[in-house]
Image 1 (cartoon, helix red, strand yellow):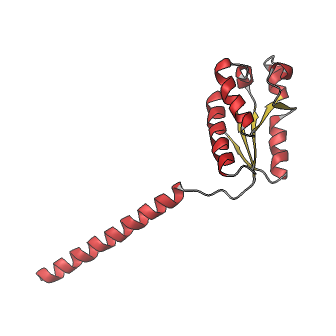
Image 2 (cartoon, rainbow, N blue to C red):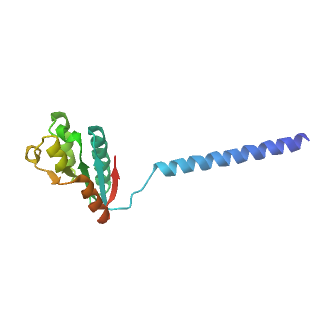
Length: 144
């Protein structure tokens, strides 16, 4: 009887170890994600998300300089695009080859002129429509 209980304990322990190993492999596989596309765009509405998007885009451009990456900016945060603390981050994004597109409707609503922004900003009349157009052009898009 003792041998039988010991055998069951070993079997259960081995099964638990195998399941734990599979769980670790599953988790590590989901952490290391590979992107296979070549065109990306993110729609952002806050400075926090803008900074995170620039960081993501910079990492992806560093891994593959040939990809196209656009960050589309809309909403009230357009008022912050001339902030001196944000300027170095925006300049770095431009230098990394990340296109910065700003919604002209939002600019108008919040009293900001496109001509007042750095020259690397690209205007689009409507950010939502622009994102739909990027989808039609096979861009991988995300709105945050």
